Image 1: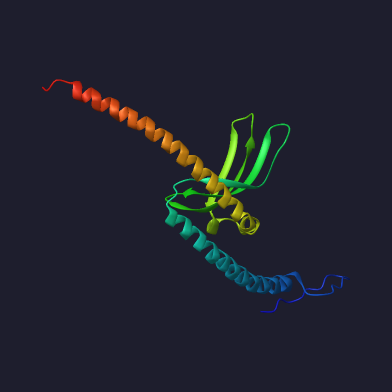
Image 2: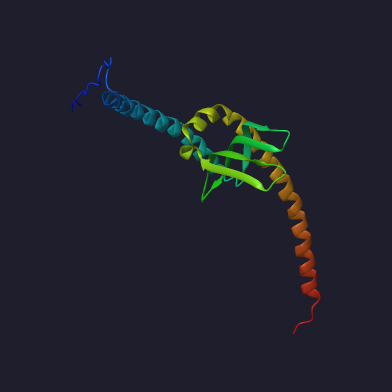
Length: 171
C-alpha cells in the first residue's frame, strides 16, 4: 500500500516519508525478532540440562550469587543475582532483581526462572553459573552440618519422650 505524498507549501522533503520508514522498519524488526527468539530458545535449551542435572540431585537448598549491585551511603540499594531456588512449585536456575532502602521498609524483589527472565539478564548471568555452583556446594555442605546437629537434638527429644511414655502407668 502506497501512502500518497502531500507536499507542504514551499517545503521539499528528501528521503522516505515516516509512514514508509515505519513499514520498512517493522519488516526488518520482524526478521530480527525471529532470529532473537530462535537464539533465546537455543540458549534456554542449553540451560535446561543444568536444571535437569540439579533436579536429579534433589538438593532442596537455595543459593544465590551476586551478579551486580550497589548500596549507597543513604542506605538505598539494588542487586541482580543468579540462583538456584524454588519458583512456584518448580526448582531451577533463577534470576533475581532486588532494590530498596536499608533503613526504610521499602523492598522490591522479582524472582523468575531463567527461561522467563528478561533477555538482558539471561545474557548477563550465563557466565556466573560456575560461581552459582560454588555457592550451591557451600550452602549444601552448611545445610548438611546443620541437619546433622538438629538430628542429634531430635534424637534426644525422641529419647526423652520415649522414656516419659515408658514411665507412665498403664490405664
